[in-house]
Image 1: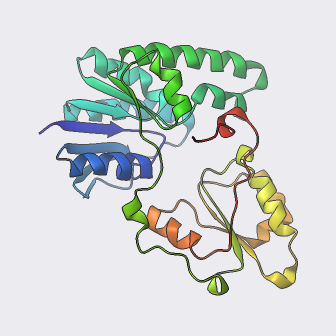
Image 2: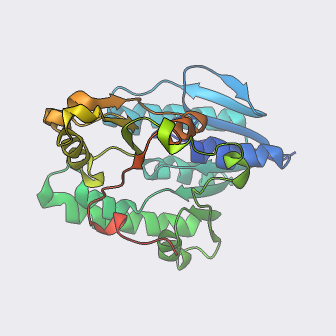
Length: 278
């Protein structure tokens, strides 16, 4: 049986793309699958082994101590194929490649473009860091056994560097939508919902401000599912009407969406968010 190890430091071990779409699919196809990533404890779920690592306290700790811990854990697994999900793990992925292992890079975002909008980086250095990140990713891609991209645009960027570039999109499986028809309109909550990454670039401030403009008599709420809400966004008056559910699993996400009346997507017109899906 071929042994496959997925590893991540940025995402949770139960991340939908990593665990459900990829690890679970591999296990169903007969592979021996382990995922190494932030989780509460070691476990086994849907025939996938979970090797838990503690969530790091800071970005620097994640990129150094946690990354090294993941590398050592990955070596212990002695897998045939390693599949990683974060650009900051490229150095340890190259170490695994140097040991003769097959290594696959799963590219979730166009990271060089994203750098231009990272608020924690000074504006003066973002262009240079983006240029450097693109060079590193492209050079490393030539060394990896294959590239898995999430969109056609990202796949196109890597195809020239590595001919073994394929796409695995984040669309749900049809089977996952069975028996999840929406509630009748009249019985749904007077609510709008936003589900996904929470950031200024994805319009979180505009969404919260908008819910605050509705009349009190409507009793409307804004249901948000995702990671932490920026403190600046909470200053809007609409924050009093927000229910922040945190990060939800797929089943809970569907239950939320089928019970609200409006879905919101207010992304800013920046390059990484304005490329359409064909």
